Length: 344
Image (cartoon, one colour):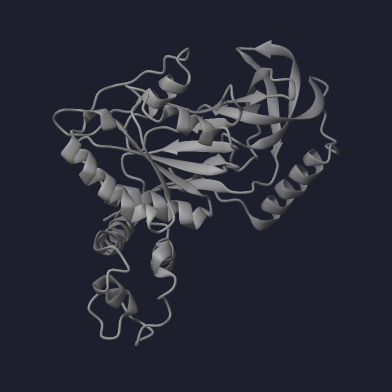
């Protein structure tokens, strides 16, 4: 069942109330709650959120129903309750404006934020069942549209022989040549884990990637005391099973924060326009707007600068092919969504 839409007047009243709460001017009867204080959301559960205060203490809080969304990484205003009830000891009143956010499209609820205030997105991929450049490209489009720097991490490289490793290194060169940082590592052997830690020490990072690529194994390598549950890749489907059920923010001993989000097998991009998808390929930027025809599809159109750049070796053929595969899947998904939404 779809959510009830708020009227413009209701939206204005909610916005005004949030503004009062952020300024500490809420006039609602709060006799059962303490003084308003700032905090940060470090875990988001289905109905609650764990909030960390300025002293590093954690409180499980209810969330005001009028708040549009609360996600890990949010800076918030909350109040501690006078007593704890069923493990809940506070209420989140309002959310400060976000500097950025990661959105996940949902068929029924539209765009849903999953994390906020991120300094770096770490795209985790693996060699099993195969290294998928198409999946990496999909995540990079998300990163470019969110305006958040990306690091491409290839896990489980201990499973590669010398010849396979050289092939993978050549594939990653495609991304290094257009300005992305890449890192080959192994949570099992510890290869390049120290380098990853030095990167994580700089601001707030988030792990994204398909299930089964080893995100939980990496977290266990970084925080051995956590013992995050891991599961093997299915021998039948080649896909991993979800091991993380809620997003959580971890503080690293050497500095920096890491957000682990639930595994995503297929990160939908159907909410993006064709132009947004095109802009998500950074190596295309120097050629856009210069094609012979304004409505160039960048496929077999005469005078297409993108196609010419591919032929001249200035754009990787794999990236160009993945771009068109993404556009095709985008069209098919939007058609399917229209079909479902109309009850056909």
